[in-house]
Image (cartoon, rainbow, N blue to C red):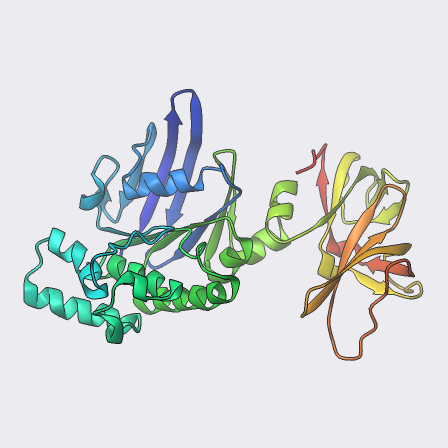
Length: 356
């Protein structure tokens, strides 16, 4: 495996700038996920690394090789596409063998590698089947085996789970992560699914409008988002607009006086509240920094958890998430409740924060 460095990469398509000054260092054996909404530039970044798009500026270095201008087949990068791109007329073994044939690997070694990689993805018993005779998860593992069989320096995954149903997606993402760790593969993956990213990555790279907004571990981005966009995209938040009146005091647009962890800078600000950090009770909670009366307006039963949308002022509503435990009482729509939280559990973004 090898370290991957993306250094100041930009890509223009005519007047459209797809990515701008993207810089990223992926350590040997690290699993990094590019996360962001559609059109943010994550797929373009992956295409530049794979060699399917030539950067307008910047460079890509894999190990000790500058691969910026090399064609895809000379980069030794394994790529798994969103639609798997399997040859429908070839068997599983023949699909996996394709990359080895292009590299003119001797038949004996090729057969050994194919057997090894099919055992690795637990498909050796299906070597003679055609893609149409496989489930979606099996097809995905064939595509993964094909990317691994020639022993790539880096593995590139382009939305590899998007065609699977929700339950299968959960299983396969764990399989990919375990396999990546087992092989110590340097891996770069693209997804727009935050749960997928949080489950699989060593580090996340959140992109918006062609730029990298924040890089860090799951905990870094969830606990310390740098701005409102990150707080809304990694996990969920309720946002309350207002201003910092004095250090530690936030005044909402609806007139609520809220204790917060803001510094000395007074002025416009946004308060972000994570739903699982809020408490909901029938009566005020003594000793808690913030405890406000409210009315339940909407309840979402999600199985393991229950979400409650609570109106706390004419202008503000927050979402409270509670675990669905046996015997627990869930307030109904229209009930009067109290929502409470510690000042430390609110995240304040000073300055004007436009809605996401």
